[in-house]
Image: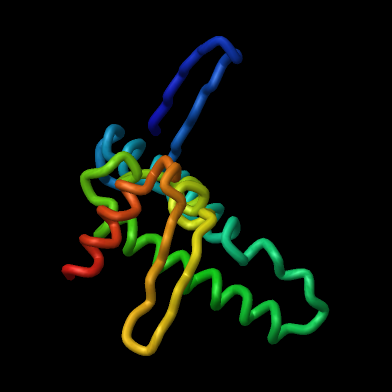
Length: 139
């Protein structure tokens, strides 16, 4: 049995883990119990993208939204682990990355040979955006 008794400004916060697993209490609390909460955070992140919008009466449109959400989450996760490694957003939540890097006004110019993305000169995260783009382009 693992017990964590904590009392903070919001009041008591007791936690109990009762199990028959042979591992020690520290391992069970930090690696098993807390990892479960972390997994719930990852599910919530995916729901923020498209998965929370499954209000259609038909099954296929809802399934397609979940598929898009899974693909979008996978892309953002790869961006976080590859392009944002060593930056302030390396451990950021998906919604934070979406708000700071993706939800940006810009102009896209496309011709036969290239696509040019022009961001505002006052965009506060332009160096972080350029860093992530450079790292992803080189890999």
